Image 1 (tube, helix red, strand yellow):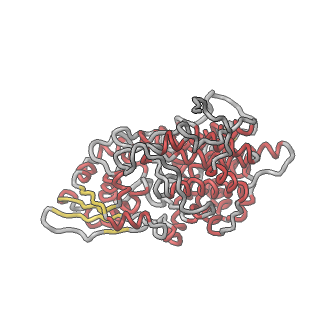
Image 2: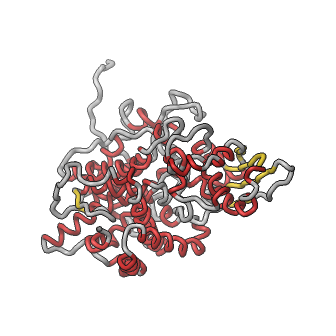
Image 3: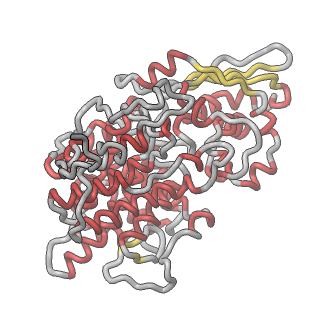
Length: 494
């Protein structure tokens, strides 16, 4: 006889959730390349956050919710005097890291910035290390931070390889929340059941829409969204470690689970039927692949799909700088993802709008010979009308080869090419850059530049003598890994 009642048989945790938790608990990282890259990633990510402290629109968000709050063993926010509870500290560190769009990038079916997870990792690790010492226990070392970074990178990146969340309108910071929840719940001492509960809550939690990343609504929320996500992860981990039950079918529950509610929707870009249901697909298991292949933004604070375009524009600058008024058209050959995400026409309302505009990020280095965070500010844009003049002369063309190579796991290129045509019929050669300087294929060339970037970012926040001390402490990967977390964070306070 048919029944109108649900079958209330509580399932096992979804396999995807179990796989994430078991990876964090059990996997041993043996890749020397992953450890070395994580060391560089730590320095670069912190440097990006320190540089962001020059911008009042970022710093207005930082500090305790209630002014004057003092937190015992509070987590430090680098470059500031703040000592906060781990939830707010994660928000602040994550906000700083992401503000200038200058930290690392992962490009796949979904893109994102795995070092965003450092906000939650550092905040929790600093608090725990101080608390341990106060209780007469050994401190947490920076090796635990680096391990958590590698694993958070891996979770976020592997989930992103074949699963496009942006195509169903969800923002990639969802993956920051999931990855951060997994690793910080482990740092906090969660057992398997508590970690399963925490990760399940990350999947059913409210997920951010991508509205704030796209015209005509692009705005500064994209600069703090990842901080919000990694902070929420710390809160969910804390809830789970207090004994809160999990949601085993968070992903697969018919009608109410993540897959049915949020992942099986369709839009104009998708070739799936509205009633078709989807689940995650996986190209590979969890290991250390993502950290080994992470992309660094070494030269330009710009959305990563434009990094090679910026390099190409710099190459053309000497040839065009004295002929800007003679330019007839600029042909930009790129890949599908760049067109879908950052190609835009019309007025650009704010810095967050400009650093996600392919045409803007090409025009500035064609004119100036470089691109810095200051070049996105309102006053700079207002004084340089040639930027919009050049934007209006750009033709954006997709290369099928560039798109294929972008998705090829053996290549993972991010190619762009630019050619400038003048009104007298002359033209430049085509400037083509297939792999940006922050790519794995250019590590040997890129890492000295990355170290210099870190040093320069330190100098924006600290006196030269202190910057040199920090740099010295960070130069040796082995000694840094063995340093107590609370001592490392103490170096970075104002």
